[in-house]
Image (tube, rainbow, N blue to C red; front, side):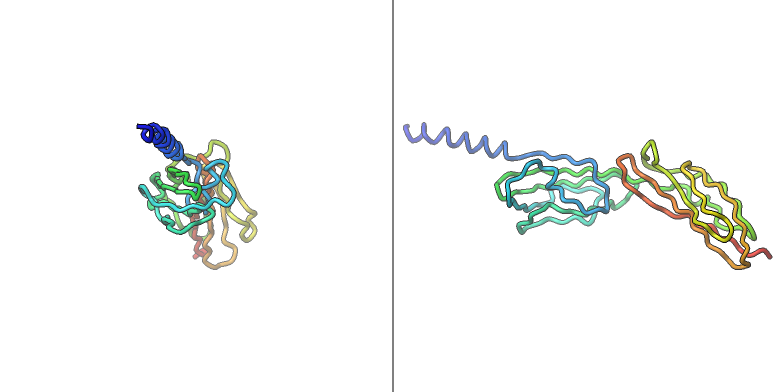
Length: 205
């Protein structure tokens, strides 16, 4: 009876410690395709602590990996299998001080130009560009979209921050020219996605 009285508090204390040692860590500000040490989201850490982890769940994500040997960081470089859809990666991370972190990384879908098929890709002699870009996925309300066409021939650089690309280009060389319009889109959490629409100008017949 005495032994039971002595052991019960120890058992409860161990169980209480184990429960409290599991820490849920949600992350929702990750830009896919960038390496990141997710242990920085765990809060204050013991000096010299190391980590191992297993994959608890994954959906629409790629380039992740479990870690069976001790690592000083929890670094991943995660991509979206289909960038038009969100993804999630859940890792169960065990620290060398016996804390367990249930890390859930929620990744937003990335902006994407969805009307490329209607882009007029060529002209003869000169080109007048007037194209309204439509984007799938949320953009930052300020500075979320911009484009640039670099200097070519006598035409200075042209840029804009509206979804309408407007430009007028004259081929003065007599040669075929492929002119890129570089589109930069920033998701609602600031992830940069770049795309290029190429405009081809044929020499005047």
